[in-house]
Length: 523
Image (cartoon, rainbow, N blue to C red; front, top):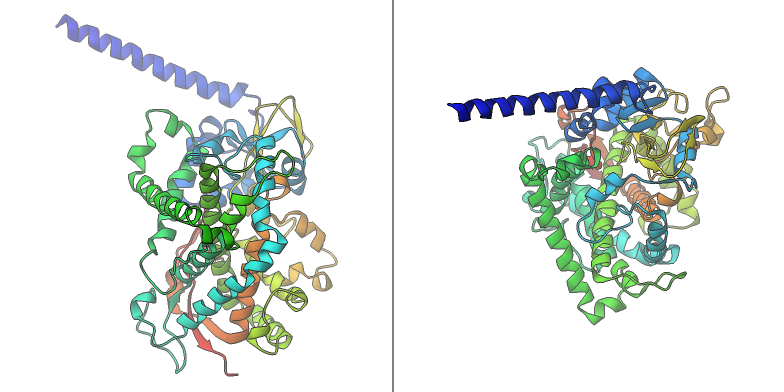
């Protein structure tokens, strides 16, 4: 009896201590923290679990935008983190300020060796980027272009092939439509398969063959499943520090991650274990032979594996999202669709002429259509936080103390009406100097706020590759095909913005659709 009384007494004391500690912590964060003067959601000001919840839900990019609409250009989105949606902040945080480094939270994304995405230290990242960029140089991109074009042509040939096995065509409906039109296609699936096939060839020199075979099609979905967990941990690393709670919350995501890493590590070992692969111009072979021009350092096997994994996700997953968004907006905007179709078809005499070069570069409306899709539905839409190192840092006129994390939410600044009037309207013309408004923001104003690949020294190293894929794919489709939306798009669930291609933000964008039907152009 006495033992039970002691037990309940100790439990009561422990409960009081816990409640008191939490109360004191909340009061401190609300009223005595260095960032207490900045507005934000109540829960966000006391715990980073608020951000973690929206990361799990997938609407963190939209919630960040909503909070800016409510509180203004500077929002406290976690106890020690500020979001700012201005061009001044974008420049101060990301473009050359040596007193910022990547948020320590990015370390939770590591599995094995660090890569260019997860490295926090500026100097370490600079050394690694000098090596990795050699595999994605302009010369390397030109050598990969035939590979890109071959996969692009194969993709649309299979889409329009009436004899192609039905199990390879996702989301088939019974609406055959008019003669010559394909069945309804879920283009998120097709573009996932296309971009992963491209990256398999470019990075490893080995084709996944997702376009023609269902064998490896689990890869894109495994990455999406894994990213749900990683996005939550990125916002609230405490979930991995305290008893590995994440193992119980995300068992499927961990299994999906392990499946993907096993697949990629097998490819790397297979490639590096064959002499012939090193003679092939792949990214892995380039990384194997590359060294830092400053220090002479080369990459280890684990580091090559880490960079290859990142390239698979960043080079395939994000590009497929951008393609899906671009095709959605073109199919949803007849004015833009017709104008782009005319521009492309007038520029080339045949589809064989579609390649990188002066002609493709002159297609200003093509680039405007792609950039407008990237603006409205950026593949990574939330904030890329940076930590202030020693001393204070001035961000958009605000003096912030050392240790503070600050970032610019990409989706939020892309939907800031100050830089983009009617931000939820797909308007490629806003990127054309000859057609920009004389009274509103200029093209230069828009470009200063445009950051789908981030900006500065930590911007996407594969931006050139992504833009090549996007330009060639869209140009080839607009020249050789007609396409239209189907009724399945009515079932797409978004965040309440009609006409916008909905993405769930889990570090990168998780997507469904658009659902399109295609018809070969009569030549």
